Image 1 (tube, rainbow over the protein chains, first blue to last red):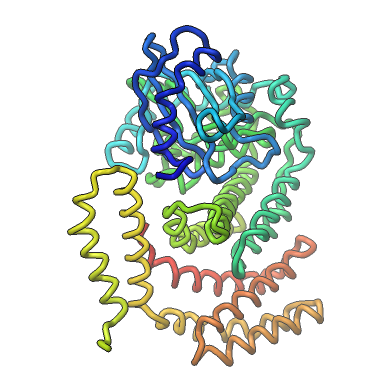
Image 2 (spheres, rainbow over the protein chains, first blue to last red; image 1 turned 90 degrees about the vertical axis):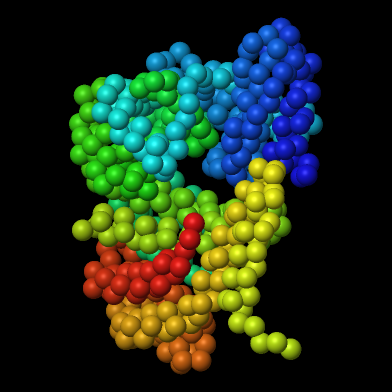
Length: 341
Length: 146
């Protein structure tokens, strides 16, 4: 059993009661622990406490996804605090623990929201999303996105982890280029083409906003036909809100031809976002972010592969990812050609 | 020494693990890791079965397109480097297709960098480059099982 692997974290979490009592008070003895997910960037544990409270621990994984100096879960902690007073149904932040000796890795603790996630790629998940997307959840989806984008960017918690908003989208493209160049093990002509196109087609973002960074159906919780939670804030940052809309509409996040996240008609997304109180969005900027986020995904996968080659990561899923890289490169090329058509 | 086809050997390993071992693995993490490993073995097997055939087909279509790349590059130094890489790709296509592919992709990468420099690309060059990179990526992608 790996000392920091999911099974080890689950075992150590069972004994966290006395520690948790010092952080959240009351009798915090742990009655049950389950593993909710085992991602590259985090392991998520669900804890039931004897007094009936239910909390979530998100332990740091081997792959760092945040581009900021702070720990990704520390960033999430402050972002969750910043959205607490809004109508965004995000998990309430409890605390961030930087000491790896407590659980085995640094971790974020949050409250647990009601509801269940769906697997968008399953037949049942897709059928569910299509059904609820045609009802109140469809409108709710864009209401929530507008609420996220309306959080003041000078909020103290955001300022603490992000600093001032970037002056240009070019900063993100430069950072992406550096990631690709650092981790590529062979020629990457498709990515070089995409990075050239991105640099030549930077969208203007006169008013930066809080961006969720991974706003898609797989990160939603539902109670009945309504959205009860937005999860996975690890990619949150200050920047162009169009990025969230592009990801919502991305072909890689749906099976349907014409339903964004298999929930609402793609052709209606920008108009419904505007009607919900969002700003006017330039479709050219959507195309930019569509290409950007695909390249970014390849960059993350190349980074994980580089870690695996260096012996810093032993997860067998990395090898599987490497095999799917050609498909991702084709998706980048498709998006690029569609954008320049 | 017996002469076992590597793809057949991998198919046997894959089948044995899937049918005889996986059903006995109760631990959810171990089972997930084994399934991921099986996917990798399956992908390697498919690659071996396809062999260099697909790669040679890509090269035979791509090389004539690549012959014109160097002439479209304005920087003499870069043009010379591209010419050298395409020549090496052409020379090794018959005997070492993997080396040829690497040279071709490096040439394409240099051309993309050059054509996007300044932000206004040569559209004809861009179209030819994308045709080749698409052919190459398509040759890789169909063998993928995720």
